[in-house]
Image (cartoon, rainbow, N blue to C red; front, top):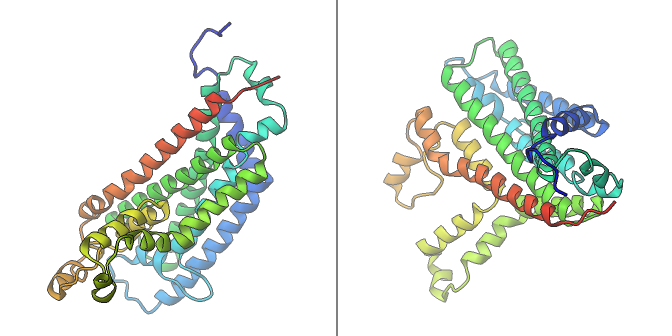
Amino acid sequence: MRRKGSPWTGMATVLTKETIDHITSARMIVLELLIVITAIGAVFAAIGVMRTVTTEDPFLFLRLLTVAREPFPSFVSFLGFVVPIVAIALGFDAINAEYSRRTLSRILSQPIYRDALLVGKFLAALLTLSLTFVALWLLITGLGLITLGVPPSGEEVGRGLMFLLATIGYAGVWLAIAMMFSALFRAPATSAMASLALWLLFAVFWSIVAGLISQIGATPEDLVFGPTQQQVELEQWVTRLSPNTLYGEVTLAMLNPATRAFTMPTDAAVFDRIVLGQPLPFDQSVLLVWPQFTGLLAGVLILFTVVYLLFQRQEIRA
């Protein structure tokens, strides 16, 4: 007999328990320590380079996030690498671990529906990631205030917040991917390897795949005179199927206000006017990357819908 009550009954309980488990787990503590240590190193390396930069730079705080110095990468490059790893670490065993421990049927025998359990687990992991990145962003801002001696402008704060939201959305995409594989495979090791393999594909090989797809049907003249406009647009469209590309473009526009376009014009006059022009206002930069930003959010919703459908169709035995 179907239990009475809302299908979201118990979601708050699951959310609270899973969040506490994530925050206090040894896995998350180790990851947080690595993130903080590496981020502090990247910021202090950037400060060493920026000592020659005048404080009249209107985007001094943004330079703090984008300047790199060997052997440390820039803070943005570091986040682009570590965000998927942390999200996968929180989501690869979110579902199949309950099967492995034989606790799923016991949990669902309580007044908790599948909907509440799945949504609670996803929101708990996303909340943990959000708290981690907000704390990291505040830490970097505090270090900048102490070392640079000047406060960030209102536009820098706005751009930093948009960058933070894009980072959380980027983490949400990889969290949903990890949970999708957790619902597909019963072995946590298999779901972790599948998630990492997909991340490696998007991070390293996707640009090659996009280039190969754009060359399908190319004529010998195209190989001599270069790709056509249609091939360039197709390659760009395929490249943007990767969450890494969407996040990279949002980051570029938010932290580099001089970014006015993501395509390289062939006409020199157009290049000078579009690419080398004055920095865009904050609202124009947001409009420039709004499709990429909404693409990340749409990716989270679509992937979580897939996870929801997979989990609802699975058989649960005592």
